[in-house]
Image (cartoon, rainbow, N blue to C red; front, side, top):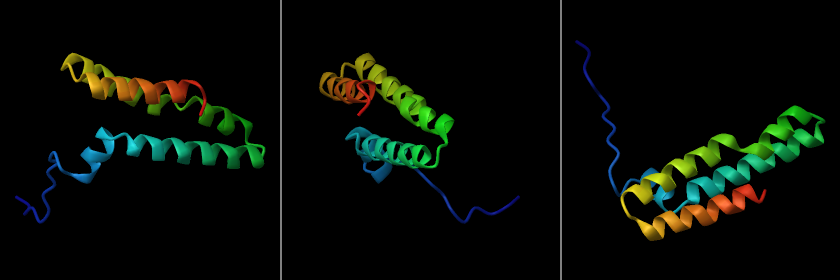
Length: 92
């Protein structure tokens, strides 16, 4: 058997978890996607530009997390995700 030299455990105060909870991860990802889309448009890569506007995986991830919040009666977190999702659907 191989020895484990590295063990990763995600916990509640992990930066990744906190960035998901406060939506900063998704806000940053949204900005990156839009910036890449603008660059694609500048290069006349119109298919890539159109895909960047859709941001499907980002929207689906936020919807999934909002549904999870609703399921566990986390009203404030649920409403925050819905508000952010609205900005995504508005195209900003």
